[in-house]
Amino acid sequence: GAGVSQTPSNKVTEKGKYVELRCDPISGHTALYWYRQSLGQGPEFLIYFQGTGAADDSGLPNDRFFAVRPEGSVSTLKIQRTERGDSAVYLCASSLTSGYQETQYFGPGTRLLVL
Amino acid sequence: ELKVEQNPLFLSMQEGKNYTIYCNYSTTSDRLYWYRQDPGKSLESLFVLLSNGAVKQEGRLMASLDTKARLSTLHITAAVHDLSATYFCAVDPGTYKYIFGTGTRLKVLA
Image (cartoon, rainbow over all chains, first blue to last red):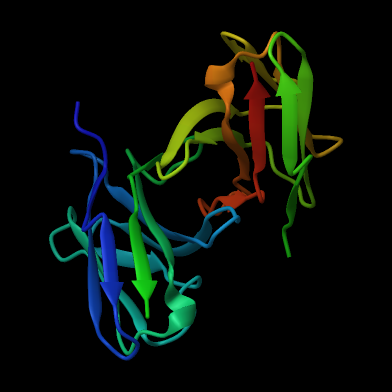
C-alpha cells in the first residue's frame, strides 16, 4: 500500500520568506508526527497530532513554526520568516494509533534550503 | 534529558566481516527501534524491540535489547555491500516522541 508522502521533495527559499510543507500519512493512521533532521544528525521531534489536534508541540523551536491537520489526515508544517538555520530535512511520520508499541513510518522528507 | 548515543559513528568494514553497533540510552525505556537510512532517502524500519531480552533477526542483521543496561546492539554478520547505509536507533520513553541517536554510517567495502 501507499506509504507516507511529502511534498515538495525539495524547497529552496530566501531568508525571510514563508514556506509550507505538506504530509500525507498512511491511510487510516490517526497519529502524525513531524521531525527535523539536520545534516549528520538523527531526526528531532517537532510536533505530534492525534486526529486533528496537536497533542504535543513541545519540539517546535519557536513561534515561527506552526502545523495544522484540519481534517485529521493531511498535515501542513508552516514556517514564517525563514532563517538560514531552518535549513534541514523535515520528516513526517505516521502510526496507526499513538498507543504503546506503535511503529512510526516515515515519509521521504522535504529538503528545505534557506538562502 | 534523555540522551541516546550510538557508537561507532562511522564504520568501514570489509565484506564478509562481522561487526556490532551499540546504542546506549540514559533513561528507562523498554521500547527501542532500529531504522536504516540510505543517502537522500527516508528512514526504513528494521526492528522493533519491545521488552528486555528481545532479540530479532532479519537476514544478516540481528538486534537485541537489554533494558537493565539501557543498551541495544545491532549485529552485522558477513557484511555485504548492500548493507551500506546509516543506521539509527530510536528510543521511545513512553511519550511517543522518539529520541534518535546520531546514527552510525556504515560502509561495506567490496
